[in-house]
Image (cartoon, rainbow, N blue to C red; front, side, top):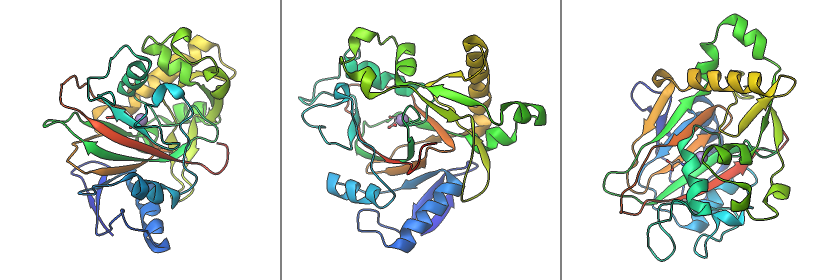
Length: 286
Ligand code: OGA
Ligand code: MN
């Protein structure tokens, strides 16, 4: 596998490996190490079907299940995938005020996939299935560089802090209300607690673990904890920490959710944008 840094960013192009074919152990290992170093890996020209995407993610661990009925359509009713899509199954534009529309709109907020779950998602694989002529970027932020740039006092203060994450918190920021969710949604997605600072087992480097789902800090007044989360998020998403991915047709982008955050950028065009999303879970609670 050939790793080429994408400009002056932390992300990289991964060449010389065809992720549509069964990966051998050495290839899986190389990708794991590249993700631990580079965080975001772009595999170009990988037109992919669902079976290939499923086989790929299964090489890295248990696939994340999509439990929320709000996200599924007849076409995307796959247990492990959902479509980050601007269209309905019939090709018509997705209603931005439908439950799916609102749910997906929250991708505009800086987030980490699956931090609202326990165990959380470790890796995401996103396959571009249809892109408009001028696709919107997806932006990624390096939570490791952001941690390194904190003052020693700040690091000492936040090491050991625990944060409550909830899908209902991130979605309420985009105007979703209780009535917009299926009745059992709350039971299926109870809030979870994760450390604010994580250490990558392969590199030993520390990083911030933040997300739009991060609601408050355990043991601090809600407002105080929320203000700290917001301050750290602003710090961590300064342009110097960000890689903006420019999508090309048939891109497959894999990223490490342990030490990156990402967000969608606005797109309101009529041309369909469809990306097939899949995630790999951590083996243990975090
Ligand atoms: C995702 C996501 C952003 C985008 O697929 O997890 O946040 O640009 N996507 O679609
Ligand atoms: Mn996401």
